[in-house]
Image (cartoon, rainbow, N blue to C red; front, side, top):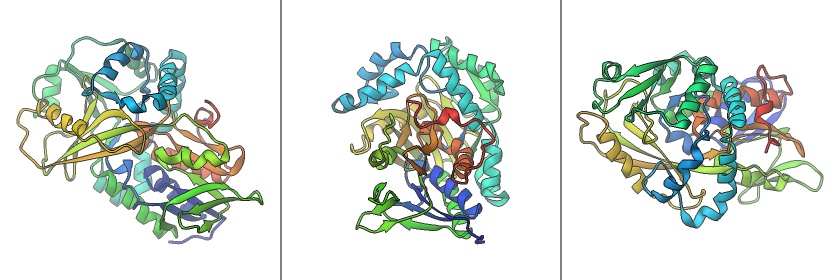
Length: 417
């Protein structure tokens, strides 16, 4: 249902962040246009494990990481791989990432993530509505499992953060793990059940449902590539599409994921954003192997039961947005998951690669551009885009309407770097 408008907005990027933000703006009465060269959700938002990690307050960079980096860089099959040709370009970001592993920064990031994520499952019910929520969202928690009996320094730091911030969690013995997920092979020594987490069984369908609600609220979806976002000679902000068409609005939102900084360069905005290229394999048609997402912490991948089959997602590759995929990394996941379950049926394997937009401290950038106050940025969610979308959309709406947010948004500032 279309509402009376209170201005206009253009949202660039139709992943989960942009689509949710556009929906909130349309519901607030703005004449909103959502622009992307793909259909909504067809980028990184479609390829994740669907986890709604409401209490994932632990950033990726943690104390103890530095000692592991040389081993990761030398192992092409490890959880983190940097293509050597790309290393000179990635080095400044990697250095900032290692600096973010200092405990003071880690503590600040944890507080910010707690405020952003803690009500994610409930907020998805509000965003989607009861019918879509019942169809797409499950509330069964998430398991983190270890084969190794001993905790690393980084792991101990993460557990201390969870305990400090009151994360709802339960430690699991090997027998507990088997009781909860009997299809797993008896290879895990210990585990953690994060009880407030949820998951979506079809991330692409989730974004499509939000896009449908957006158009029903009067929003317009344009399938087009944005060539530039800049200021005209008159000082007015403008969007120029490939082909030369120029668009204007009262407000602009940049939520183009890993491509966001390219769009912002002409506005003088420079943010340390790197793409953590993630891979997945979906084993088509497999059902009933697990009732909740399961993270294999030793090998850094996650398994989740989806509507279309069993999805195994993980690994990080640093190679920029333009390099071709290396699907050997996805094929590694197939071997890992077969060792994880007792009797995994044969299935057709479908491989995928997507670009996660990540900043060094794991805290997204959600803020107003000082040099162009009509431009709002919302990107850099890394592994937490699906989880952070509902709160991010609410913050974007408040920034566009110059409302006071109900959480402290200073930690998401554009100039903190």
